[in-house]
Amino acid sequence: MSEQKSLRDIEDVITKAIKKVNGRKENDLCKYLPMTTGGYMHHFTLRKMKVKQPQELSAIIEKFIINNEKPSSVAPKQRAARGSRKRRDQYTFSRGQLERMLSIARLAGDKEMVAMLSPKKSLATAKRELIASIRHAKIDQELWNSYVECVNAQQAVINAYANDMALSK
Image 1 (spheres, rainbow, N blue to C red):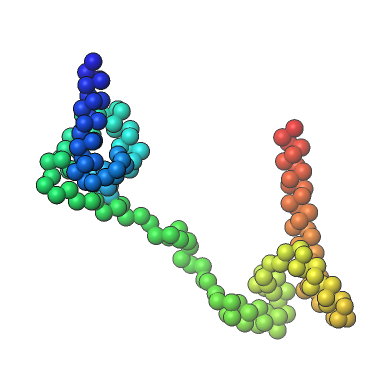
Image 2 (image 1 turned 180 degrees about the vertical axis):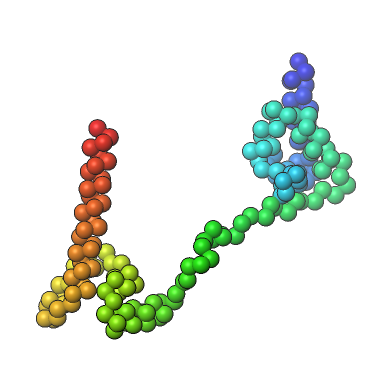
């Protein structure tokens, strides 16, 4: 009986609090309930506390919303900026800078750097460019190498898929 009473009590407290903050649903209360870790309460936490710790949730709601003359919303928890896990020691180059480095590598005859700095092409693009160069009677070893690289990459994907299918049987 006491469990039903506490559930009814928490529902009454939640209803009062929703009316006080001019909300429409339970989740609207979350941004008024601060957490010790910073920021406001997550709606999953509110739901969990409602079932497992109704007295504690009721006390929090009464303290920060019902007994508070003018409840104020809590600032959200500070999150790490997007891309904050990126390595700082890696350089990012503009397209023009990359093309300059690529032309320098070509002039130096450094095939490894040329391959590394060249944009990766799809098989269809490499095939189309290779056919166009043949039509124009131009021989371009880099174009042939990129075509071979695309074919090998596609074959590796096909082989990996075939292996996965064989293992799953």
